[in-house]
Image (cartoon, rainbow, N blue to C red; front, side, top):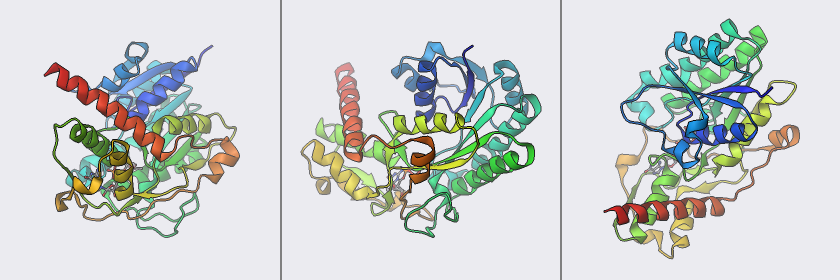
Length: 327
Ligand code: GDR
């Protein structure tokens, strides 16, 4: 019999790639979705999987809707990828962020504990929990010091997952994922903001690119590689937490250089520093140590930052070209 899985946040970048992966593995995939007035299913359509998913309406802040979802899907695996996931917004909507990104995790865990406690649970933890860096390379043992309402909320979900593992023997795993990007990344995140701008500037429909702190360093990988690690965690005999990263860090500035160089432009001619995009508190350096994921899961990042940025610029060139043709 094929396995069944619930994915929250299925309309997001990771949700779409994970759904594709699970469908390829013959899972029955249930997407837990909040009702919205405008459809946000473009990623599932781009991967051509929209009609292969069964959708269940609900919200992470509504425990009863999660209980209903677990009753319907009877999942073997439950992937909680839903959240208010943009760090910048979390200062503007801290309570909403705490409710969905933090308390939402507890609602997922409760729905599993109440309805089907043998469900394996994946929690999308994040390198943002490291925040104010305590160690130059971060592993599962590095102390946390989150720097945003988003990071604080994610820490709550992280420790709740560990607590339910220790208290109720729930098979809960936290993937501490470092930044992961793709052509399906939302435009508000810096890599996609850059690749979209590069495409528009190259095709003559944008003049410059306004950015905030370009000295911040991130460990960027390809989301398509990272969803494999999520699945691998739930296939182990023992539930545990893993850092998922490439082990290489790059400044936003150098990432821009890679993107502009690819289309033979000089980033210095176009990037404008705009304090509007500074954050009240910044995470200066993220660099993950993926040794544990490599040793135990056999997982490794396969895509270099250069190849990732090329993939994103190419996709944005195609999109902007199509937009221009329609006009
Ligand atoms: P991040 O991703 O906050 O690391 O969280 P983001 O791409 O938003 O920022 C990365 C770094 O770039 C700097 N930056 C800018 N960022 C944005 N968005 N826009 C700008 O104009 C800009 N200029 C400079 C930021 O200050 C920051 O230092 C992402 C999210 O996906 C989280 O949900 C996830 O948990 C972590 O990655 C891992």
